[in-house]
Image (cartoon, rainbow, N blue to C red):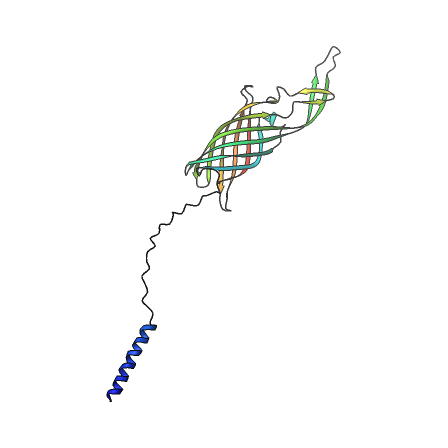
Amino acid sequence: MHIGSIRRTAALAALAALVLCAIAPLPARAEQPDTYDHPAKRAAVDTSRFLPRWLHLHAGIGVGWIASPIAIRQLYQAGQGYEAGLEARPASDWRVRLTGEYQTLPIVIDKAFRFVIPAGLDGEVVADTVQLEGTGQGWLGSGRLEAQKALIPGFWAVGGFGGGYLTSGLNAVNVLGTSFSFEGVLPGVSGWVLMPTLGGIAESDFLGPTLALEVRWTGIVMPERAGEHLQAWSIRIGWSGY
């Protein structure tokens, strides 16, 4: 091999090495940490609730009726009842509720009364029958505070006390042009009442929201009329949890 050839080969090799160095990718630079202080992001404000997280809403709708005494029960039919209030949960198996309630008391009277007038001077006894018909609308507005205890999952025992205002809805009725007052027969035309209550609630969240079936007994005590106490029952469908 000639010396000129060797020189040309060496020159070509050097040129190829220069080309490869020019087109070869440079090694990746290590990413420099961003030393700029960004302002801390604020946590998103939850605007879906307007109550503190320890406080919840509840509501219910259903029917209620006066169960006793019998003489009063026969005057009233079952009426619609509505309730709504606030609920606190101090423990997983305890709840405390403050509730407002409105209960309608529809009156439908259709009774036949037989009366006998003792014999007079002529010795004749008079007996007759009077058909008494009438309608009216009573109502009961009340508030109560109650505690609820979970006995088993999904079932709560209820006990509480409250008070309200009762209007019987029927002051008097006209029969053959004569007005007969119900004073002394009905538990007062209207008045303030005290209301102890007991009941049970069965709950389920199978469909999403927490729905409840409630059965409740309520005593209705009128302090102004001693001895005249009523008992009422109600069945309601409720919602709670927000």
